[in-house]
Length: 275
Image (cartoon, rainbow, N blue to C red; front, side, top):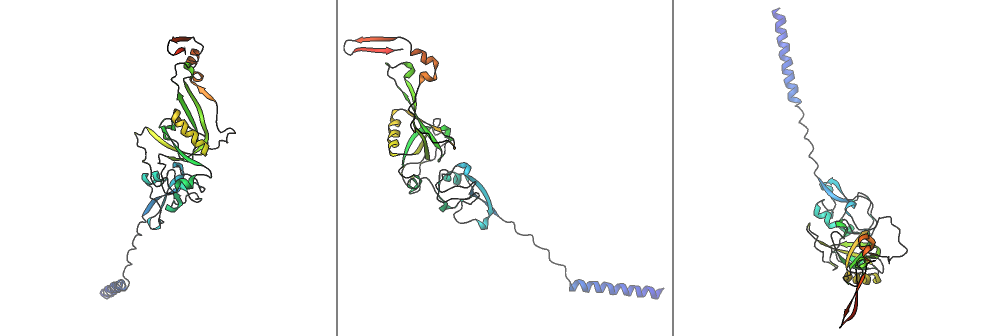
């Protein structure tokens, strides 16, 4: 028994020395390092296909996440300021949906040559002042088509009460090409603040219509009415129908059938006042 135990101890010792030698020759593999995290950036891209000459609206922009090392030169990080700078920008060449917007893809309002590039052949640009409410509460964007409505307040006491306020469409289906931008090449207008009470809207019109707008802006208050995207062009561009206050309010219409008073002035003659 003693001899068997001795051989067993010798065998265990040899096995232990053999294991130590194997570990020495075959060290444990080094731990695999975790891959470095990929840093990504959010850049601006177009949400849908835009043809050359289109004017960008808020819905045309989207965020695209790309590795920081793959951000192309001229791309814009998605920030509120960057988005605001692209509103109303003209697309130089057709851009496919989800394509990253580069600096040379667009021309912004205020850039030198913007108006010359965005205006159609034979067209003119003219700006009108509207308040926030009559300018559709700030919901109008470059590229929209609008009707220009003129309202006038006639204070002539000889006119019937129901006809002292009137409204008419001066122009129909004209394109908006800029909002709150100065009509001076290379000079960008200040963006409207939250408390801004007025807006400047630049319209694309014919030379004759530019004169009509200039006169209308002196006659009374201008308002904009936005047209649907798929609206068909009207045969008669100028709506000659006049709407009077009596057409809106039945109470004012009743005054038109009232009496009139003649006042005789020895120096100025007879004057008629209708009520």
